Amino acid sequence: MKTLRLWSAGCAGGEEAYSLAMLADMLLPERGGWNILIVGTDIDSAAISKARRGRYGPWSFRMVPPMLRRRYFRPENGEWLLDERIRSLATFRVSNLVGEAFPDPASELRDMDLILCRNVFIYFDPAAAAAVAAKFAATLREGGYLMTAHAELIGRPAPGLESRLFAEGVVYQKKAAVPRPLPGPFPAARAASSPPASGGAAPLEDARACADRGEFELAERLCREASAADPLAAEPYFLLAQLAQIRADPGAAKEFLNKAIYLAPRFVAAYLELAALCERAEELPRARTLRRAALGIVRGLPEDSMVEQCGVTAAELARWLEQWAES
Ligand SMILES: C[S@@+](CC[C@H](N)C(=O)[O-])C[C@H]1O[C@@H](n2cnc3c(N)ncnc32)[C@H](O)[C@@H]1O
Image (cartoon, rainbow, N blue to C red; front, top):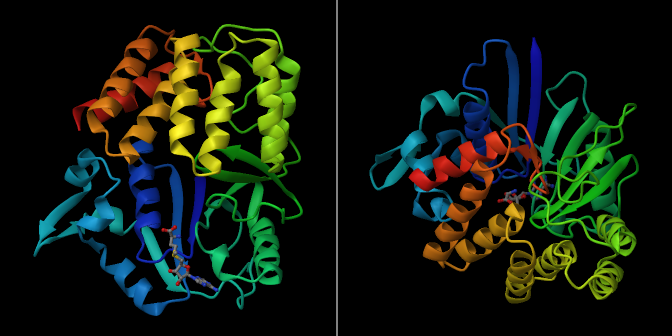
């Protein structure tokens, strides 16, 4: 039996835990050989009761593709009720991250593959944040991931966790005996959808390493050096766009992504990143056009080639983008 153990810590009304459940349903429609645990915990018992109801108003759907709502919810009394099949995948309970001891071999809070703890560390003083991060590290299995929101743990890395920077936040991976590279923003290998190879790679590698460590200003300076050394390289602009998002400057991020696309018109990840930014700014037609352009490029790639900076194969990404286009 294969296992998947996912924890939404500080889950509020359960949206995050149910997002994991929907994702599990989409990625593993046949779950016969799987033992899947999805648990949501929160200190607030009212939030846990709401989570158990699985009933949401329009606000909870503001960033959700309509296709997902159609697939998994039905309208009831002006709200949307989550399909019982998905609701039953997640369990919820009250728990205080600061006061409770975990990992606990006698409870489900152990050997996690993924812990989501977003926008919760802001409630803790530095000592409590460090203690909770250390408990999370001990609760992950080797190679498991902890995801926080932007900058929540930057400056207080937890022992045993390695950080990786993504535009959407920081991901920490528990060091494994056999290292498992995280497919993600800064892979060393080049793929079919890479921007053209360019010189000046060394400062860019250093910039990625700095960004992964949370040294954003130095990362930005190194990106600019990489760009000056090779003005036609698209990758420094892609990284600059991620750094601009970290400092909450979507306008600059868009400019950098436009430059990356201008320099490397087949740079799929830059299209997708720009589409996400446009969507957040409610520029929906532009977002759609960008995703369609990305789909066109992805369809021209060998199916099993990895799409640079996306961490998935061309076939997988095409399937996702097709679903999106239908929604
Ligand atoms: C801003 S919400 C974030 C919800 C969700 N993670 C998200 O990003 O949408 C913060 C949640 O953390 C919970 N929380 C605060 N202190 C906590 C603690 N010591 N233990 C568990 N949950 C806590 C709050 O009750 C609240 O539901």
